[in-house]
Image 1 (cartoon, rainbow, N blue to C red):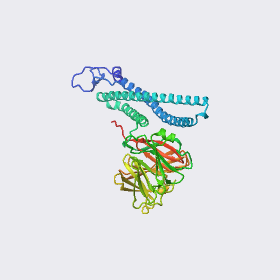
Image 2: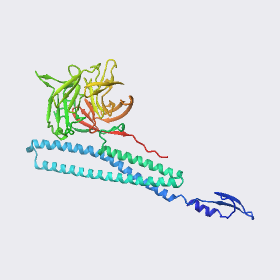
Image 3: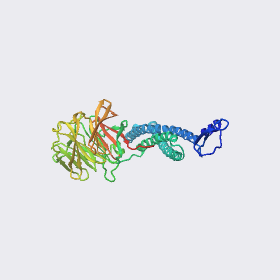
Image 4: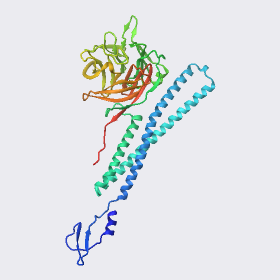
Length: 463
């Protein structure tokens, strides 16, 4: 349109003979100069492009709003979990001793329950609304991208390119928002398409251990990393006042764990009968089998809790001289992730540097070994995610940091900085569970868990 207006204002048309070129110039017999311009059949729809840019601003505002909502959901979930946990404990205490509570206290608890129910309903409605909005934004962007493609084909590609790039940025932002939303409410359990851990949530403190004593600072808790059918909700717990592993307790679900109502207690020691005790508080449960460090002889052990049978194997060259920073006797540390069963240790030959081994679950043999460059006594703990080793260390009394990774697929190691908050300074257990993508920590006698967020690969390109 602009070109057309300028043409009629500044140019005069003239009929000339000869070849028709896009531009022609000459003079008349009277000496007047003239020029001739042939415009394309259609002019560039600048108004349509401006409209698309305005739409981009609108979509960007919507996306920023949805991203802030996702961040709010993360905080709300942690608050709701704490409220529900506290209410559950309070109700259990009231059931045990109802005569100690008056009508006013009972009414107050009822009000709290109704408030939590209302909060959950509100959160559920908000999540559904956000999902609908994200779908709407994606459809809107898809329509705009199609229009931009048509403009590129029909008109000057360079004029459309700037706007297309704006929409590529918006599309990337939308995918990031959708990914965070899905990670929170629809995690890709068991899938390793990400490129590693991005961040760790704030600690989710469930409660003090089932023995209700802070003196039981050495222990662990969590879920089966490869549960048998029907045992997907099962939790386990083990703890002691020292690093000896005497028993493991199983609970049918999280509620039973909080209520301290086990369905099975497995004793690893019965006087004059058997001694299957372990040491080190660095065990995992996988397919209803507990993998742990056997006390005597020094070996890795597997206690099948279904058949009540035990097997142990000595790990060649593994040393008892190199434990983790926080606790003694953590010489063999077991981990179960999406890709299998693992054990870490150090040897005299490695001079205390951490060694990672992959365990064949059928033969119960270490079938492959990798040497790392980190000194094990300087490490707080380690865990495995999708075949990648993550090592932590203390930053201060309230902060731990993932500082090192080793990828067994590429055999590449790297130094990173992913800090996360500790509930208390000392912890004896840290492990990742692939069934819910959470970290489980036994933090000075308390059950503590963390959500794990990942970096997801994928990019958009545009010319």
